[in-house]
Image 1 (cartoon, protein in one colour):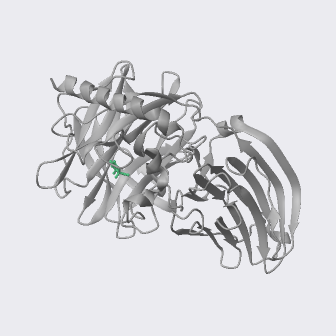
Image 2 (cartoon, helix red, strand yellow):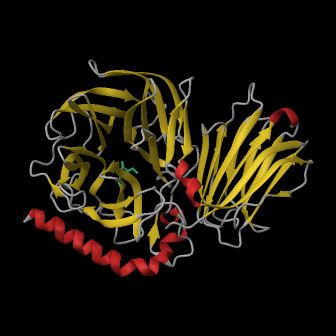
Image 3 (cartoon, protein in one colour):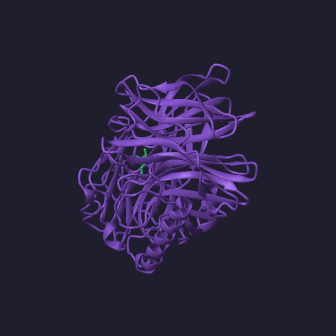
Length: 494
Ligand code: FRU
């Protein structure tokens, strides 16, 4: 019966999506090339992998409304991570351990084993005394239709970890064993717990891989762990850590002891709309990472996620990024090179000398969906700051300030659209630097800004209309020299 119940719940969800999707597709705020759901609410990326010749993205999905509730796993496949084919929901709540309305099938990961595709997810339910989370398994022979394992749940919260703070398993294989990191909270500190298994079904607790000492919050959501270059990388999204929403640590790891010793920490993205990233390997060996273009803590009110709920949907992913390790242990996050395939209307300018206080228009596609790259020649710049206005119409705009005096970059969207609040800020390291690179990806409802060799990034949602298509640059208190300006329109893929 219970196998049938999940199938029935999936069919019900599919009927709802089918009934909604045409109307939703007409929405004026729909992204043009960023991944989003056909209808309903979406949050974290789940189970990202390349499987049988396609990229598979699963995602936290509520097909029944534009707000978070009863989590399903949505599913889509692609050849290039830009053009997508939606498949039926992979998981729907159906069992005692994942059936509660305010719970369901929470975040997790995917792995191929002996010809089957396994999903490892958190079952979230409510037994009357609060949310209870356990780790569960589902598998599939064809990569489309999944069945939950009869022996679920496979892991319960260990001692000292409240059952409401035990979630988001990320699984990988090393030599003959499977490993898992899972997010947790113990004694008010965020933790990543390490487990190990021979068969994906029976798990043994190893130890605490890393934990907050107060600086990174009380709970770690969506941890991920992988080898890159000659280091190990741990990423997680802390709860209760202020502006830090997507942290990385790089260091050394020993499989025989389970000890991770990190030397470097950083932020994957400082913007308000980058959370719960998950990574996976592309077939060519690239380590790719995808985040949910939103987050929880800035939102004080249900409408704060933006006005798209009126169009019957909410949520998109940030553009997938390639992770690279630098010599000093920091990480770069570069938009995937596949984006080049949707460029049009190329525009180039070798150099632009900005006189103080004067606005210079920059051209890029239709001013809505575009890519812009340029460099600030710091040796020939004496301005105290450079301001870039994006998605402007004379009154509304998003203001990005590169403050060379304060060594800080900020993105202020309080005048962007009448919806979004907040300024994101990050420190800029300018010592011995001759050029500062800037790369912007703009889509219908989002801006992503990359600087300092893709190590200092800001992703912000901006619900601006098509009349907001002006972009200009301005130097303050001095001159600035900008060079290697290159821009493109980006074609619609969604
Ligand atoms: C992160 C998160 C996860 C959880 C999921 C529920 O955004 O809170 O910890 O599994 O979303 O939708």
